[in-house]
Length: 398
Image (cartoon, rainbow, N blue to C red; front, side, top):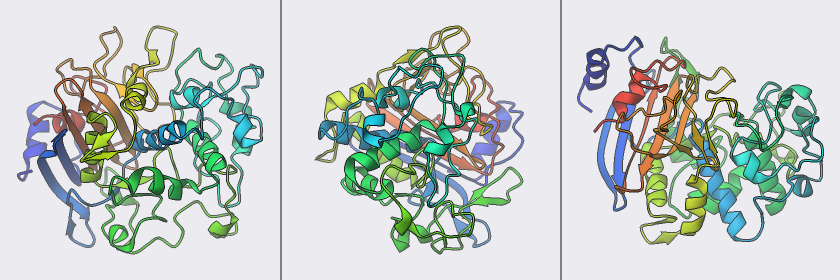
């Protein structure tokens, strides 16, 4: 991207979001490959290292979409089922306190309709801790709505999903995702750094807040001493891991470190309905199932913004959602989910955390897609024509 392009575009549209990003990248692609790359800014200010489209960043909630690819691989292999009570795998009860007879399933968890909230926490379960304790807190559950009746975006769904994946496979979530998704696609990426190689670790993108102070992954080119939440005594011994006890350990909800070019490959896989460059990862039916909306906004049917203070959009941000995939440009009053501004029903996922905003969107009809991220921004989105930020609205444009 030429110098000043993004800032100039933001000024031209009259944005009230004053902070200029530390870095931005936009990769356009179609089924055949990458069609265009724009990159600007610094991956690491202190090191004087410029950003490249191959540098891995903590991509936030797009991690959920990638985790769902792993779920569907296990479904196709017969290891998981979308409609079985997850308690049967975990061997501990996952039940809404007000609706204990209603099974909680992977389909409900993947679509944020399980009746869960983030009010009891979801990510700070340490080495040796147990996710079950979070769900035993009454605040973890939406007392006003039964499972399956209401959409409420909740990160805690994905640690539960990861715990189920671990229990069904006997494998640690980060290693399982390497085997099921990342390695078959030839993508150098990882959940929470532990399973990335040294060369990938050395290229980490530092995340900055709006004051351009480092807040995440300021690793100085080295592997972090502890890539997960350590125990209260500082213990970070991953040999304490037990399948199904702590699906939060490797941050399935937001902890994927992946480059923009790696995300473009995921996008091309989705455009290819499960196949990219001759590699068949999923059936076309599985990809269509992920994208098919299970919930569309109507008054009283769900919450259209995230509630954990991460800045994941304002009112009207979420209006259609499938299995870890959003659909944009919902033609319903109260929906503001079209950062592109063209009314096209693209599918994919957004991300927001630690001063980063991100997106991966495909248009199956035209066979095109785009992925982007920006660092060093306020987490509250302030757009000009949507519930997305002005920065994202600018990055959607060619």
